[in-house]
Image (cartoon, rainbow, N blue to C red; front, top):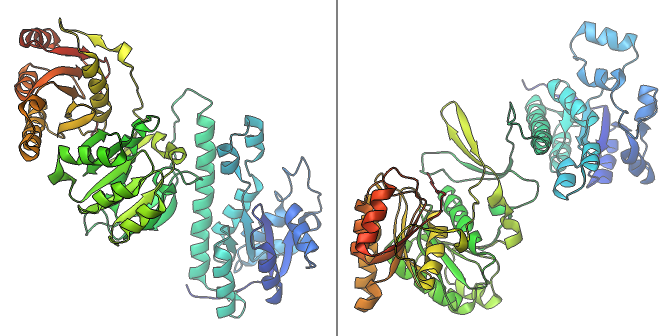
Length: 528
């Protein structure tokens, strides 16, 4: 359809008054009569523009604190009447219902009210009823009605009217209808998700809504189409990062940076500088340091080959010295809570490097439920935010870990939670020394971690004493002693794991025979 529709009457009811007066003036210049409600009508009238109150249209005043004002046949009949239906038109004439060609509505700020932390009653009052009802009526009848709900579309509307001498095309109206239905769906979804917090029952129907942040060049591979949507109103998590330089973020960049942010958030409250290096959503190096530069170099040393083309995240302000080290190796993304002006200058020599900042307060995006699509549906689970203190560890071997080993065990356990299963992490002195990720067999992950550690020793030419007193973290239990034996052969002297295997007794016996310490957490950290 390409038929053009002239606009003669518009109903405007907006909570967000941005651009309202300029829009109203422009519509009047096109010869369009304006109808409006409450504060919107007041704002238009105070600007010296002619406007009709909706109460004159309905014959009823606004009532019940504004809850009832547009829920009336003279409004919805004007929006829903089919323009080429003789029966509809005759019924409109009979009941003195006048056609409304343009509806401009944006909704009560329910999402903003919830995110601002207001109480239950305040949030309830911000659930818009009349607005979504009008949007749906107008969108359903988009063959004959224009519906605008985004302030960003004001400009598009005026350009369309200018291009077509006060008329709009069907394709334009159809696009507006899609935006309107998407908005009401997202709005209802926000209300549903909020109400679900007040019950312990799993919702029978779960809706997920998102707002487009950007269309990506491609997905995980060049032949795949991809986009990035934010799920919250405020820009939290990766939707809230500030990009200072570099190429556009790709699908893989966003996915890997999310993994980096999730892991670095484990150390947000730690006073010590921490660096995380991610490759293909897995950490390949994590370390503390006396300085940020030292933390980066220690993390890099764990697996320098894998770090090439990786994502680097920090928990402290990125400084010049660290920046100078970072530009020595090709890196896709660098992200930190903030970056000094001098450090930004250093990065300017690497124009393609994506330099991001994300304040710690915006990392709450990491706390949302995890959603994974499967054939015919999707899985939803709460975030794995389980924390354990060293006092909660259960020593199951005759030998207890030393205080230094305990510190490293806790560090390695935090890292292991973010490694794809089966996950094995070697660590010492606050730095990872070998990571085995994503293997079908736990003993194979242990072999890989051992191999990575041997490569580290070989490349750094460290002394023999540095090959001893490693700790190991395993995201799940050892079903058999073989992985443990392989770890001890690599220099592991203390292990942290969940326990809970039928083979625990045998594994503990082997640990005792080999003279190592082992603690159980009672919780596993599978990651797929």
